[in-house]
Image (tube, rainbow, N blue to C red; front, side, top):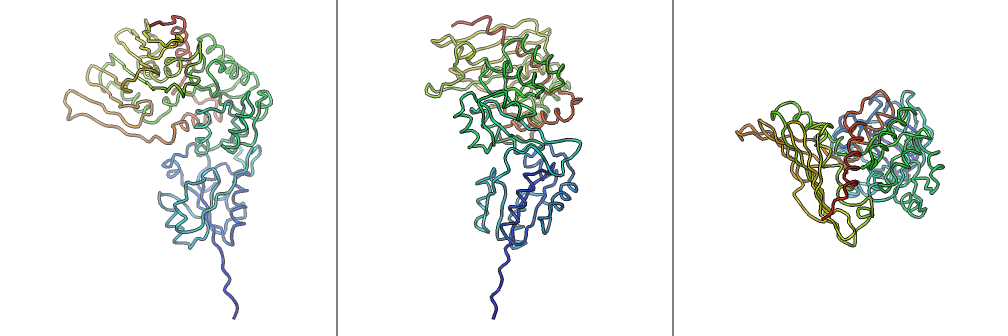
Length: 453
C-alpha cells in the first residue's frame, strides 16, 4: 500500500500595492515553503482600518499583479479583522507566512499552524509591473535616534515608499539602526547617501536641520524635516524659496497637524459652532530624568520651548492665525540657562493665547479652545488627538468626536508627504510653508530674549 502524500498549504496576505520586486520575491519564497499558495489581498477599506495609508492601485489591479507573478494557486480577498484565523481553518492551512518586518505580530496563530516570517528584499531601486503614473519614493533617513526609529517602524504602513539607506556621521550608530530596521545601506557620507534617495527624512539634532535640509534640496531631493525645522525665520524662508526654485517638496514634520481628529477639531473651531474663538490654551510638558538627558538639554538650542514648543504653537496659529500683535515669554531655567518651563503669551486683535512647555515642571497636557458660544476640550495628551468634546452652557448639547490614531501617528504626515511628492500641485494646507515660517520666527524671538529665572 502506497503512503499518503502530504500536500502542504501555505497562506500569505498583503496589499501588494505598486507591485514591485520585494512583493515578487516574497511570493516566490512563500510558494517555496509548500505545495499550494493562497494569497489574501486586502481591500482599500480594510487597509484604512488597519492604518495602511496611501493605497494607489485598485483592488482588481493588485489581484491581477499577484496573479501575474505566477506563484499564487488561489487568490482571496481580505476585508475584515479576524479573517486570517477563519481562513486558516477554512482552507486547512499548514503554514502562515508574512514579511519579517511583522515578526512576532502573528505568533498567536502558532496554535493553529506553523508561522514563518520571510526576510524582505532590501534596497528596492526598481520595480516589476510598476504603475507608470506613480513610482516608489526612495526615502533615506538622516539620523538614527529615537524619533528616526519610530519613523522607520511607520513606513511599512504607507504605500509607495521604500527606505534604502540611513545616514549618521557616526557609522556605528547607522550600522546598528540598519540592522535593527532592515535597511540595506548605512552611511556616514551624506553626499553618497543623497545619491541613494529621492527624498530625505531629516531627524538629526535641531541645529543641524538647516544644513542637511539645504544640501538635500540643492541635490534635487524632497525633504521631510523634523520639528522645529529651523530656529530662524530667515532660514525657513530661504529653504522654502529654494525648494520651490528646485521643484521639490519641503515639509515640516509636526505630526499632530496631519491627524484626522485634529483636522476635524480645526474645522469645528473655525466653523462658528462655538462662536468667535477668544482664547486658545495648550500645554505639553514631559519630565526628563537626569540620566536620560539628551538633545533636549543641548546648550544653545535645547530646552523645553525649542524641544516641545512646535506642538502647543500649532493650534494657536492654525486657529487664530499668523498675525499676532505681540508675543512675550516667561520661563524658569536650570543651572545651564536652559528653560525647563516656558509660557508664551500671544495677543491678537480680539483674541489671546497661551502655550506652555516643560521639561522640569509638569502640568496638565490639555488643549482648551474658548469661544463666545462654547468651548472645545481635548484631554491630555492632546497632541496625540484621538477624541475631543465640544461643550456648551447646556450640557445636554455637548458633543464628543472620535477618529483613529494608529501607531506613533507619524504615518499620517508621511502619507501626505508621499502624496505631495507624487503630485506637486497638491496644496499642503495641513502644515504650510507659512505655518513653518511663523513657527521659526516665534522660536527666533524666544531665543533672542534669552529668558532668565
